[in-house]
Length: 89
Image 1 (cartoon, rainbow, N blue to C red):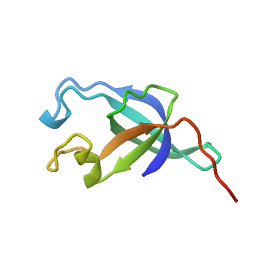
Image 2: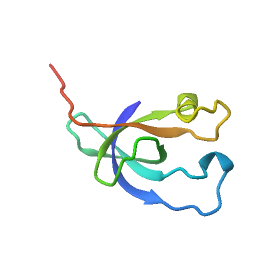
Image 3: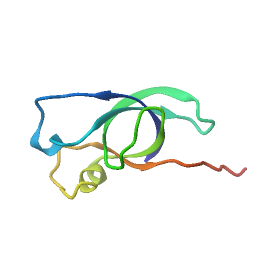
């Protein structure tokens, strides 16, 4: 998992059945200071996130389970909207 910021969205009229009815968002990874990194990916939203919000993204097989399907084509899913981050040390 990682923290990122939602920087946009993707509209795809024709898509895999696993993606029908799901919102696709563009997420840019951030470092521990909240600075945007070069890494950007598309993630399926499971929590109602919007542009400008910091989110937690999970990748791989666990991302498909977010929506209850182990054979899903989903590889990245937004699983939380971040309220705050505290790093000690």
